[in-house]
Structure formats: structure tokens, C-alpha cells
Amino acid sequence: MSKKLEVNPNSPLDKIKAESHRNAPEDTQVRFAQTLQGYEQALKLMQAQKFEKAKPLFEKVVESGISELADRAKVHINICNQHMEEVQNTFNTPEEHYDFAVSLMNLGDFVTAREHMEALSVQAPTLDFVWYGLAVLECLTGRTTESLQHLDQAIRLNPCNRFQARNDPDFKNMADDPRFTELLYPEGSIGA
Image (cartoon, rainbow, N blue to C red; front, side, top):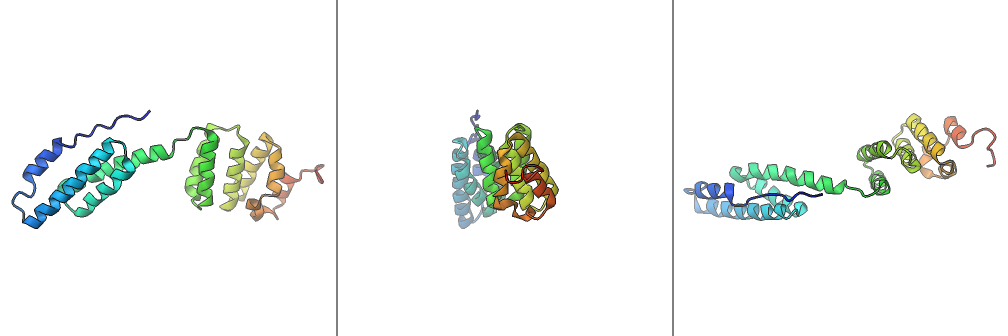
């Protein structure tokens, strides 16, 4: 699944080593050498696919202000970010993906949680808990109409969600909404 990242730590750097800072003051040469060493170490980590360790080293190179290396380091930071995001968003099951989205909701990151929940609703539209989670998310963000639509879908897929929603504190914002009451206590089911 993961590709071997090809990074040749010697090729472009040999030219930089030879040309850069040849006639610069000694303290600049020392700073350049230290930065170059950090850059090479970051490249090796990146090649070993240790992106979370390589990224901070590349960031130090950028902070050094040595333009010959900083521009290259910025490109490598972007590559590290892309690979870390791929790893972070790889889920073995819809349940794992759902748990991740719920954890985002618990952290208050509703925008990213919504992206994941909506992706799940497309990937696994028959899973009732996905629609229930979307209903909770919409309720927590004040989108009552959408919350009711998603809760209705969750109940259609699994009627037990009606009972769960009755006692779920996440729906307290809608407790006085007659549409919510109607959905949870349809005619003929009072006392059920």
C-alpha cells in the first residue's frame, strides 16, 4: 500500500555544499553546515517514512533562513503533511471511521467531524449509527432541520434509535421542538 519514497540525500546537496557560503564569514559557514546536517537527517527520516520526525527538522531548516535549503525544505514539509494525513485518515472499518469522527465532535472540531460523517454517509448509507451521529452533530451545531432529517433516517434503519434519542443529552437543544417530540413519540406509541 505504501510506496517507497525515493530521496537521494547526496545529489542536489553536493552542488549546494560546493557553491554555497564558500566565501562567507566563518559563523555563517558553521550555521550553514549545521542546517545542512539537519536537512540531511530530515531527508533520511523522510526516506524511512518517518514523516512525523522529519517534519520538525525541515521546519528548523526553514526557520534558519538559509534560502538554498529552506525552499527545498518547504516542499518536503508539504510531502510530510500529505503522508501524515493519509496515515491519519486510513480506517479499516466504517466503525473506526465513525469513532474518529465522534472523537472530533468531542474535541469541538465540528467542521472536520462533519466532513468525515458526510463521507461515511456516502460510503456506508445503510449504517444507522452514521445517520444518528450526523443527527447529533447537526443538533450540536444548531442545525435542527438537518438533525431531524438524519435522526429520522437513523430511526428508519434501526427503530431502537428512537429510544436511544429519547435519553440522549446531546439532543437537549431540541427537547421542546414539537417535530422532535413527534419523531420520538409518534401517534399510537405513547408509553412505548
